[in-house]
Length: 557
Image (tube, rainbow, N blue to C red; front, side):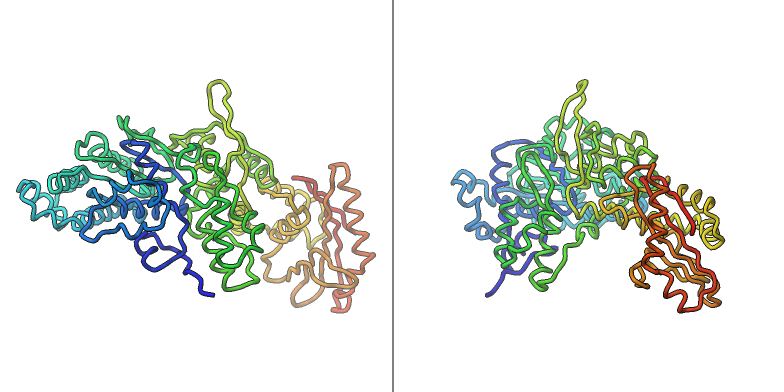
């Protein structure tokens, strides 16, 4: 059976149709855009949720070109919506910009790329320079932008100039599409030139979208609505469509039914539960949404390997800097909230739709709204309290949970490398239980824990603290005697000292001592020291270690 190719990384609607890729039909979005009649629509969704492909679809539908693109939409939902909508097809000049590549580390480099992006769009419409309807003054300025010889200030209103020239040439108002408008702002925030980038984006938007008689309508996409810095100052014709908005809710990401059909198209129905657990969980408006990037990649892998296991595809495409900063810079309240999320509890916080990156440093409440709008949390309910809108949030799925865990694990290992654990290791080798307790409890207070599998977490935590000595080998879950000890530490050359550690988890703080003795008894009952005796170790130290939440007790045999 022949299967359609899977569109991994395909963001051009025309290429997708012409090459016969599998397509989840979102064309009724065009109908809703026409019906809502908003002058400027802003769609905010997480990265890799189909924004760029939808913008390409919109461009191909409305743009007037020499080649008729109507065939691209034959048989799709918009072609069945009625004759009214066909009247709009191929009727408008369209300006389209993508800012997703503006990720430079300094403003000068970012502005240079912006000039290149503008220049390419001017060049794409160069045929209008032959029109007698465009003034010579505008033509000269147009050419200077194409050739990138224009003054820097001219790029601030370049979109206004292009739209005016297009209207003069075609006697038709212009559609302006700007994709991933906030990527430059995110990069500028982490790069330290945020104010410069805000001023640039604000100037471009004001001239193109605020008072532009040549504008038919505009569409912007991004992760966040950045308005406090007045990027959208006076843009009273702006309609914001966020994840809390009901209209357009099904057009970004895949619905449950779309995922079902996708899996069935490749004979992968048996993975339905795994797909749901890993990649479902988002709620846009009232619509249940799956992560489309992860679904596409998983189905591609599953088609080629029937034993495929789910993995966090999204973590490789979306910036996780904010999660890293949250873990590294967060105070105890933030760390406690992350622990709650990882342990399947909720976090409740005020909802701010007009977030700025600068806000996050000033007020930690903004962090949770940021994580919600960028796809790292999902809202289970909204409610009003004292005229403030609140959201109750959880982790949406296993994929996002793994991103948090991996970030926390990386941070913990980095902390160990920077601060060292020599004091702990020496105390273990010397048999100093008081010092061991002090050091482990100190690290526990800094750690962000997740307790869905208690013993595995504490085992990994303690093994991570002990690994790193050049003179000793740390063996984890090594087969020995009649069972499996949790951790062994063995002197590498002289074989004088070896350590056996067995870990238990208490349900109450008062049970810590009891659990320590149970661990020691297990070491004896299962003869964990057999291997060490066979290898001629002279001094074998045995520890029973018990954990309860952020507390630890140690007993030595």
